[in-house]
Image (cartoon, rainbow, N blue to C red):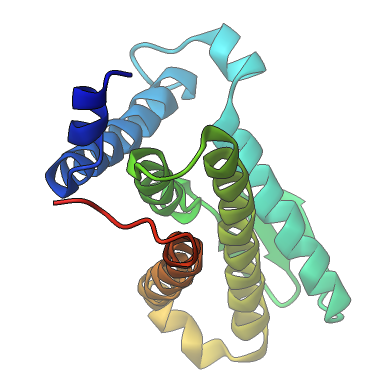
Length: 193
């Protein structure tokens, strides 16, 4: 990269523009891809559905992880398609909006757009951060199942957990990014003007 390009790359406006562009691109790519692997979609691809269906893989990780946590708390359950069936007629459905893909793509966009890290550090942070986000989502899904199985009156407020999870997940991301950026202060690297 030439020195002129390096200077532009380190400008705050370039970081902001890159972050917003990447966040939108990644976010809408996921929805486009979900349309390609959904049998009801007009552009369904059996190949992508069978071999590269990462939304389904993420869903299964969330469902099976939450199921294991529920078993650890003594709650009988089983995974059935896109849901966890819990005793006493409780079902926890994990649809596309539950996957946390919007949160993950926002996190990835920030890490990719940030100018002062090596590719190796970015990849490591993206992997660990993604795993932390998925783990918090597994805990959320298991918590919803646990609460709904114990307290019937809470079920009428079923959608509240999405908003609470988003707030919590973004706080976790902010804390992760804050600790990641602290490394720059240790090496006296700051965003240029």
